[in-house]
Length: 256
Length: 249
Image 1: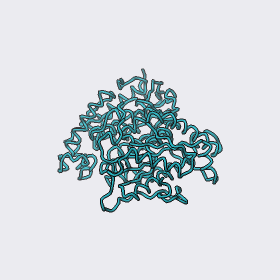
Image 2: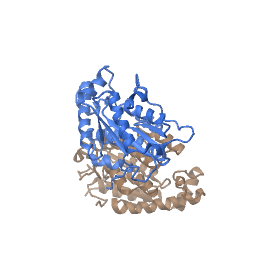
Image 3: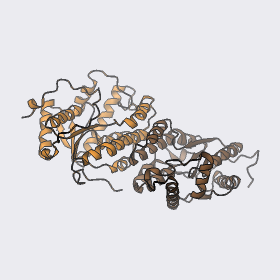
Image 4: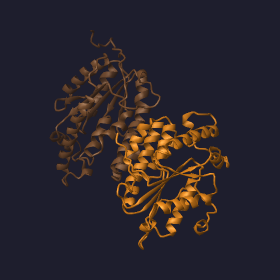
């Protein structure tokens, strides 16, 4: 099967797409939020899109999760549906219109997660082969224990699928979550070279990571080309409430 | 051999089973003892009438039955219906949404029923989904990979009815043509009647193309309901007796 191997730039589109990937608790959402603020404050055309956020598909996904109706196959397909909706209606049109599109998770999340759930890798990759590759993919690599600690510190109610409870890895949700995250990490690391992940050491403090991210973005993307004319911005969907960022350093404090 | 009479119930023999592609993780196909019978055809081709008659006959012959069909899953049927009403989904999204609906029924109804030895009657299957997407220009190999989750049926009947007749039946029933069954989203014509004719002709051609790959039985749907049903019963009897009707390659 023909795999879509081209990035958005290689497809000749004027915009660029930057994705962040990493385990839950790797700090990737904080980092992409700070990147977004930095780009916006420079007056650039930026759009942010989050995994599993398509309005149309959301109702079905949340019903499936709440009622534990999902199998590995339907879990995979419903997330692919969500991605396709965002991809065709938002990501591609905005890249074509010359935006810098920021994605909190991209197809690699599906590649890792669905395979850990037992779906055949070629099947999953085949489904997503309509999607172009990101121009930049940051992988926030934290030690497993660090990300587990970040998530588990507050002793949160781990959700059924989030903890991988459907895989029956362990009867205890925390133990299940640990095993699940460990397997996810293996999958990510195995993809890292193939998809040219820019690996960021997520054990570092927020500001150090952000400085590296901004430098890489500035080096690899001609940011001047994305300056916005004096026009209103299309509204990005709101960042979900669980991803609250406290004490965000002001961009000028982080830069150099 | 004795015909299936009132006191003689045919016990279906085991047949080889396979998924079209990667299948569903952790499913042992050889344990799926039941039978999967698919009836395909356009709206107005008589699918539901035929299936209703087949259920009567099968149950009368001592076989437990289960019915499935498109857009009937617990998981996404309502959401899919709503999205389709608004016609806001792009084609890959709609395709994957239908695949989700199919997979949910496959895993929660079809496979468990087959395992329990039921005769599963499917009012349409992956072929309609593939044909619809292919007339909309989607990649066949992408679809084949996607629907590699599907189990190969024991028999697939395509009720073939000419578009001219489908139009008549649609008007007789609803006095209107359905937006999607007319392929209006394709913009083949601004005129709905023309659009319907073109779309149904394209679909028929696509089914003939898929027939080569999937080897389903094309049934002349222009005959009387009883004649068609007699043909279906005869072929299904053979399937229950363990004879393979659909050549698969």
